[in-house]
Length: 359
Length: 276
Image 1: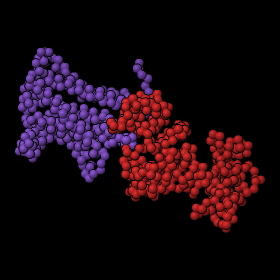
Image 2: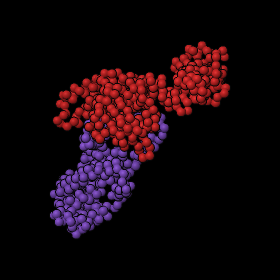
Image 3: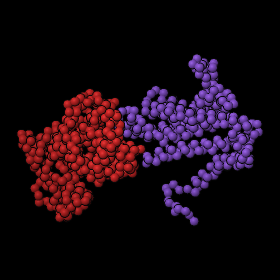
Image 4: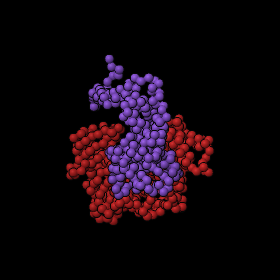
């Protein structure tokens, strides 16, 4: 079932939460709504679910207008950040809830409900918890139960509001891989909200980046990461260093370093900002490299297999962050407080009016 | 020799606080109740049994326990409703209404009794219209229930209110997204969550009604066999220097009330146990 969002607006008092958003989620796709807090992603999700009403605009499921349909009639499965499991009900009763509240005419038989619930509990690999109560389960288990409960009503679309937000890092990573596999099995059109770019890039078929109630970019995870549409998306998707650059005849110059920028063919000496990710900076221990800038190593921090450096170049006030594998760092023999030479090997230039080039 | 190894706590003083608790409970509660029970044991079993099974006394038990149960049940329903309105909606004068709920705590019960009798007497503001429908409140058992309802109002409201404030709105949203209509959500999600608090409020309102004296004596008219509550009989016996009779009836009240509160608390424990 596809979801169509047609020019939706929503404001709370004088705060504009969703600003004229139009999007289509294709059938069977798993889409991430990614953005910082206050970007309107959760509000948009709640509008799709029918938990909020848009001020203007329409929501359609598979072409059918559902804007004025009550949430209980929409056929959506909604998973909350804090699970929202009914704590006075056992796991079994929680998952069965959506089936047992149906009017008598359409309610399945007790045996049928039982079969269905156990099937779902097996799907989320928690069939052994059927008679426990939510407070006896861990956070990750609760969220899987919440998901089983949402799936029990056979929703046309599955909506997840920061589903892993309340979990610790390891459980989070496991659960999102599990969600991806689950989605590949059941193929229900799904939208999940997250502020974690890693999560969005890893799990989804498609990423919609939001900021200040607007859609900044909409594309596959690779597209969004490799070809960010604007400086906001670039910065939101990871750490970044900013350099002053000049674009001239299809090349970008950062200091003495020249990087290709074919999109800016025909530009003459235009000032711009070059965005360089920490792993896109080469670090040397000696000066014999073309265009490399001299810098002081101010801080070395080892994070697992990677080493992060904070460097200060001679003519710049801002710190440069670089990242390199530990073995490479050892081979260079760099010291905190010592000298280093750095050179960007890849950059992305944005002119003040946000036109884009690859380098 | 210590029973359990003392654990280091951020705020020490177990010995001091526990000692004070025992002393306090002893002075204000256990010693008076104990003395009272001790006094009861000085009478013979026959005297005791005769005192507590007089027909007039048995009639008063029925009114006291029955009336208190009915009043507490009325308060359970409407107290929950008041709490719901105070938590869920914003309206002008909300703070005033919130403060008014506590008034039955503060107002001398005699004042309440006189006010109620003035209102509900057959010439009173409310009473004269009820009279048209053949309903009499003042000097009837209905009047007793009205008074007991009045003084028990704050208990359910004040116990349910904080629980309702903590109730996650997400539960209602989850229930609705799973296809439940509003009534089903209230019945299957909200009420079970409120049940322990409702039962606590119910127990408190019941206990308060059982012990009430001041407001009831004004509105009931104190007709033997009809509108006499047990506390009134106890006072009447004490005034006639029949201390044994008063103590015997008091003991029955004490035991019965204790048993009923125990049952309600047991229910409350049983429902809250599953909530984690």
